[in-house]
Image (cartoon, rainbow, N blue to C red; front, side):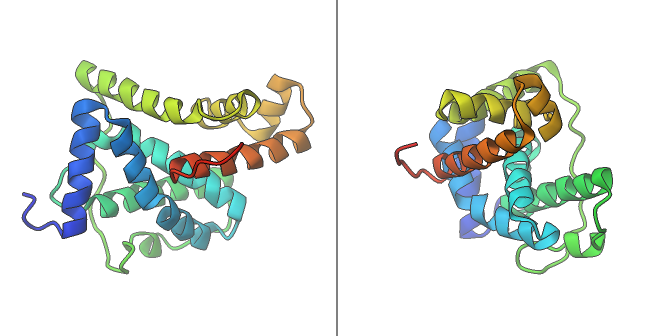
Length: 200
C-alpha cells in the first residue's frame, strides 16, 4: 500500500505512525513545521487575507490532528492534508458568504494535479475518541507554551470556535484589543509550530 508513496510520503508516514502509536509530540511538531507555510500560502491565495489565512491554517492543522487516524497511505499525506484544508476553506466561505471560489480549483493538489477522493467519515468509536483526545492534548500542549493572556484567547478562538465579538464579550475587552492580542498570539503560535524559540 505504501509502495506508491514518494520519499517525502514515506517520511510523513513514519511521522504519522509515531504520532498515532506513541502520541509523540516531536512527530506532531515535525508535521506542523513541514506543512505550516505551504498550507498558509495555499489558503492565502484562496482568501486573499493574511489574518484569515493564518486562522484557517491553524484551524486546518487542528482538524488534521483530530482526524489523523483517518489517513490511509494509499495516497500522500500532503494530498490528504491539503484536501482537508481546502474543504475547511470551502466551509468557511459558504458559512460567511464570502466571494465564491471555484471548487474545481480547490480540488487541485499542491502540484496542480486534480484530486477526486472524499474524506472518510469522522464518526468515531470509543478507541478513536480516546485517540482524538490525545491529539487535542498535543495541540493544547503547544498552545500552553503561550503567555497566559494569549493562551486564553487562542483557546476561545480555536478550541471553542468563538467569534471576535463573542471573545470580546466573554473577556470583557474591546474588540480591537481582542483582534490585536489574537494577532500577536497567532504569531507566537506560528513560531512555536515552526520550532522557533524566541522571547515571547
